[in-house]
Amino acid sequence: MLKEIEAKFRELYNQEPVVVRSPGRVNLIGEHTDYNEGFVLPAAINKEMFFAMAPNGTNTFRAYSFNLEERADFDLSQVKPSDMGWANYLLGVVAQLQRAGHNVKGFDVVFGGNVPIGAGLSSSAALECGMAFGLNEIFGFGIEKLTLVKMAQKAEHEYAGVMCGIMDQFASMFGKRDHAIKLDCRSLEYAYYHLAMEDYRIVLCDTQVKHSLASSEYNTRRKECEAGVAILHRYYPEVLSLRGATLDMLAQHQQEFDPVVYRRCTYVVSENNRVEAACADLARGDMKSFGKRMYASHEGLQHDYEVSCPELDFLVEQAKRSDKVLGARMMGGGFGGCTINLVQIDALDTFVQQMEQAYQQRFGITLKTYIAEIVDGSSFAE
Image (tube, rainbow, N blue to C red; front, side, top):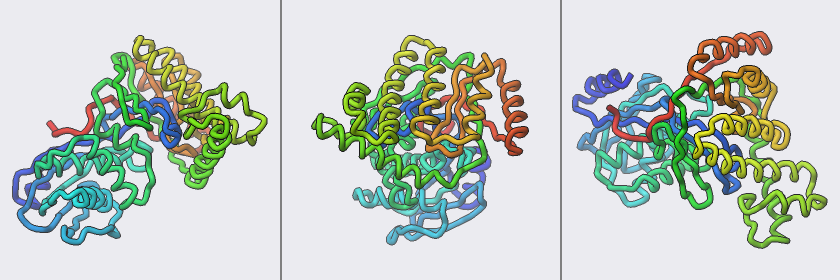
C-alpha cells in the first residue's frame, strides 16, 4: 500500500514526497483510568496510516484519501471544520500549528492505511499524529514530540468533536517496538516495559457490535467517579481524583457511598493497582502473571464498572478455555468493540478458527480478527 500511496502522490502532484507512517494502538491494561488521572499501558501496533507529503509553493492544502478515493483542497488562510469527516482530522492539526504561531504553507498529501475503522484501534490518533509528524518534518518547525501529541489531541477535541484522553495520540507517537508504555495520565511521565512477545502475538477479536449505550454511559461513569472523589475529598483533601485514592480509603467510608458509585470507584483504584503490578510482571519477564491480570481487568470492567456486553464477555470466556491464551479482556470504552488476547504463535490459526466458529454459532455474526505486532511510533516510512 505504501508504494501505491507514493505512486498516487507522484501521479496527482508531480513531485517527490516525504513519506511518514503512524500506527494505531492497543491498550494492554488500564481501562477507564485515563480520565481519572491514572495509569494506562498502551502499545503501538502494525496497523498503520501512511502519508506521502510535500510543500507545493501555494497557499492551498491539497489532500487525497487513498482508501476513500476522495480529493479536497483547502485554503490555508481560512482553516475551519469541513463537511468531509476525514478532512477534519487533518485540518484540526493544521489549525493547532497555526494557533501556535507556525507558518503552515501550502502542501500536498496522499494518505491511507490499514488501521481498521471503528475497531477501537485509534485510526483517528494515527491520522492526527502522522499529519503532525509530517508537517513538522517538511516545514522544519522543530516541535518536540510531546507538543505534537498535545496538538493532535486538541485537533480531535476541536475538529472531530471527541473529548478523548491523551493515551491514543501518546501511544501513536511514542510507541517503541516490542515495548508497552506505562503512561501516567496525570503527569504525562512515561516508562517503557519490554514485552517478551517472541512466542506470542496480540490477537484482536472485533465483536462487530457497538451498543448505543456507549456514549451516554461513558458520561455517567465520569460523573459517578467524580461523585466518589467528592466524598473522599471531604476526609482526604489531597484526593483530587481517583488516582489519589486507595482501597482502604474507600472501605473506611463505604457506608457513605451509593453502592453503584462505590463499585465504580473500587474498579478504578483496583485497575490502577493492576497496571502497576502488571508492569512489575513485565520487568520480571513473567508473562503468565501479566495475562492473569488481563482477565482480572475484564472481570472488573464486567461486574464493577459495568461497561462490557454479552458479546465481549462471551469472547473472553471462550479465550479462557484455551491454555494457549495467556490473557484476554475487553479493550476500550466498552459496549462492543474488541477483545485483546495474548495468544501463543503456534496456536494462532486454531484460536482464530475456534473463536470465529463459536461467535458465529452464538450470535450469528461474523467475527473479525486482527493479528498485531508491537512497533515503533510515528516515524519516516522505510
